[in-house]
Image (cartoon, rainbow, N blue to C red):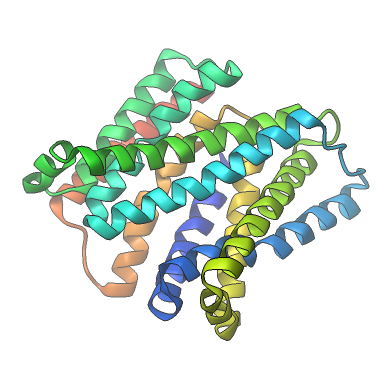
Amino acid sequence: MPITLAAASAQVVRNGVQAGLTQTIGTLGATQVRFVFGWPFAMLFLLAAMVISDDPLPTMNAAALGWATLGAVGQIGATAAMLLVMNQRAFGVAYAYIKTEPVLVAVMGVVLLGDHLGPLAWAAIGTVTVGVLVASARPADYGKLFGEGRMIAWGLASGAMFGLSAIAFRGAIGALESGTFLIRALCVLAVGLTIQTALLGLWLAVRDRSVFLGSLRVWRSSLGAGFLGAFASACWFSAFALTPAANVRTLGLIEMPLAALLAKRLTGKSPSRYELAGLAVVMTGVALLLASLAA
């Protein structure tokens, strides 16, 4: 639980930094910072953990590499689909589509990894999903959540691919045959970011070199976003090594009230009534999840 809370907190701050970068270097530029500038920090985290623990680097077998590749590609695809939805629809409506992820993670975890959950955990996942829907859209916009097939498809695809990447990264960590949970998690993180950096670097080299050059011009902010992204991912992966991904992603929705608090501090704007109602439902779901873990 502390690891997931650290991941969610770092992710909220990283999202704020990336939002600022978007105004400077565009959406794609801000997105690639997460991978390209996060990679060296992931390597440093792994090296530091190996030195401190005196554990050797785990052997990357075919199963772990396959899962890590699936997770890396799935995360890139999820980000692309998310940006497509957010460019077409208001943030709240887009967020509601994408944050169906905990339900999808739970189902895929059962099918792909055999991560079975108890009834209370399933109730928690359903509750937080309802809370996300309530908090993300005004009552007047509910029709948009169900009335536009193409955007629903892309939003669900994004949530599904984010969920698949979480399951795949957990599968990669579990496939490694040696090392502590932290070493295995950081090893998979380093491999995943290496794959993502290579793929995205090749894409930018062929399609839009100016985007990468733009991120170099604001390297201080890019490094900050890269560090926060790598730190958040290190925490997410460490949590995946300890419990089913559905538990992690459900508890991770604690980021919603954290983001609301940060937004109020930065903008001075208080959450609306429907946002507060949705956050209350999300927190009820988180409480159910904690009860299921304690049972």
